[in-house]
Length: 286
Image 1 (tube, rainbow, N blue to C red):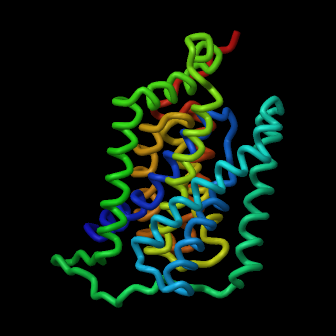
Image 2 (cartoon, rainbow, N blue to C red):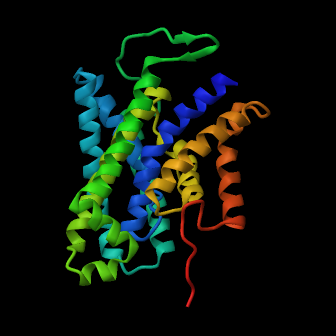
């Protein structure tokens, strides 16, 4: 049981940063951007390219992946989504799904379909009684905690963060109060892109590096965001913990290959019972 809880915490640490990015993008841009899987894939392969073919230190590769994620999210928003701002959210959602396929198949074309890994030294897992955990997983958890604390401080202690929250709550009122909406959208997309690029590095730690890596994480990420309340950053954090634990506890009664079905189940139940999520606000219909 203790090992299952540890595995659930590791899964939550893997899901939480991209779920936060997904919720922030939804709050600022007002549509569910399903291209998060493609962005994560770009991040992990950017890190791989710098760490293995270019033989750069891993920390340099991680920084490069963070930058690559920020750039690809910003460019896709400027070229693809910005001209379609007035389109219906469902149209943008479909376009974002198409973008995911374009990004993933572009990566497949460049790097091939084979499974890859970072150039890191082999390590033995740390054993504490019946609990086994690797140093990479500890780093993954530490990175997720740092991102959560940094994001909290950004949103609550800085003028830019408060402007982001105002834009997410009421973009029209925020503009009337003098908030530069265009600049805030740029900052938000760059920050969320950096989170998604770094999430790719974390995923490469714990999972095999292959072109469909990001897509395999998309359902748990969206499930976490919906469970916590889509658009709520703190809800995404809570949702990631609950989804991660639920996935791992499901392995006690189901084969591990069915873990993704847990995400689908959570989405279906929330949409039926509490569409606004645990920390979300119900929509007021006029």
